[in-house]
Length: 253
Image: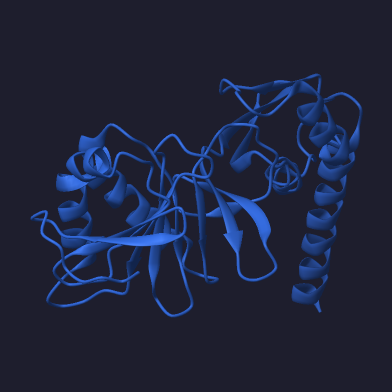
């Protein structure tokens, strides 16, 4: 009986102590007076920060739910990741990692447009920046971005920018090259081939692009690089056969 009485007394003391601690923490003697975003912001606006604070900050220094505050900031369109910590005696510090958009993304047949960040992840936000346009099947964003970056390097000797890259459901690749015309030059790379890899076909085209353009004396509308030993270009709705060595390959008209 003595042991039981002591156990009950101990439990009562612990419970009373916990209640006192909770009561003290709930008192308005530890109010939150300041929230500081410690990282410079480029895309997130003060209005959005204020909205996230009003939506999530409640309680005092000890009772505020940091997870809720973090989640509220990560709902903002341009926030990729947020970290929140208490700053004694009456503040919160928020560190934000903003999204860095590198391309627009068109997914599937629906044509829904999103943005792609540097990690190859999709996010929804508004941007007026002139970014390349990528497209492909769901789950292939990172692959398409990596190929776009690879092909941009291969096309860099031309001094022209790749306007976009797309991957079809049949694993066929196509590019848009800025050649000064509306919409740019469509470059059909097709599917990967063991005897003529995509990078080889594109490099071959880049090497003879200027000479070919000069000989044709007219802007190219489309270049078909799906041939293992040459390519064809289209001008005004016609195919003009050519090859990397300048010799005629076949009459496709």
